[in-house]
Image 1: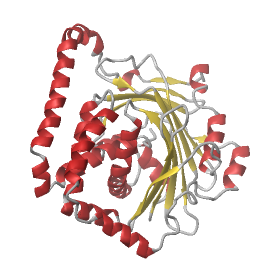
Image 2: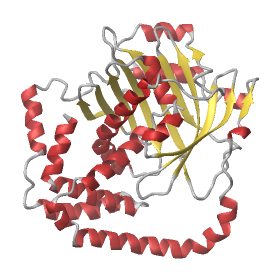
Image 3: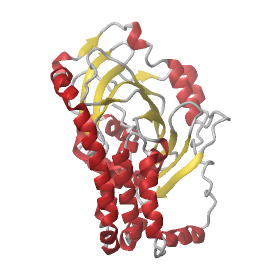
Image 4: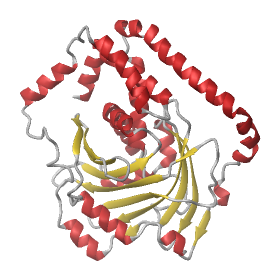
Length: 404
């Protein structure tokens, strides 16, 4: 399945892991009464919640723990059904191509999130918050010395993803609609300190001329994936990407638009994304290099969206071929910065913390707890990790060198 939604989750876990490992001597000082107070607050809330719902959870445990669907129960339909064929349509592909070519809603205000690069990969992203809906991200990633076909196989290979992505716990194929090439599956993912998230989604893959690939992913419901109390079902998920070769180079790029609501506070989700996404992208690049050494082919012979890849309609092929502009090339506010300005900003990252930072950091802990609303544990823990990272000069300097 397309793995574009892994970025936000991977950024969450990567940031959590990095900040936990980069604390220095000053971090130990903060880890005294400030951390203890936050943890005690978390424990009190959790104990009250668990005591209140213990009886109810015990009664529903048997009904809520249905066995995992095995591959033997996968439904393969040789004739298209109306319910499957209408989940992802040609109109969705047309809208995706337009969005990736820069035809965005003029009422949407986009802001830059990040732009980083190293010798083998570059990444940039921007986001906007629609009036009605969760945060929408638009990103572009360029992989050096990589073919579009290998990158496509890598993104769609869930079995290999389990080997390197710590947020990815389970996946199963539920059904395949052969005529349309639509595949439906279920994925279980984890966020730090939160209940497991369950995704039931449909996805479809298209191939155009010159090894251009498109993929669209949508949330859906399926009788083979009944709701379980131990998971939080993600209700809103819309994502799509395009993989193509970068003209005149040995690199390829993936342009992506992504929107989902996993039950996280909007401001917290944006903070976690901006702080953790680059680390996750670098980890993904390392996994891609290992994957390419294995030949870049998926295991198994069952029908999937990859084996049933559809042809891009001719009328959309013409429009896609006529545009070669990257989707967010002109969106970056610091696109024209000089190297001296970039170096100056890098030095700011390693500047010694002020004496007032401790007081402000403690206020940040309480503020972020409030921002998470129904998830106080995430707010407190992320805030503490953020404070420790800021106070650790060595950790901040190392992170800055890695990102540059």
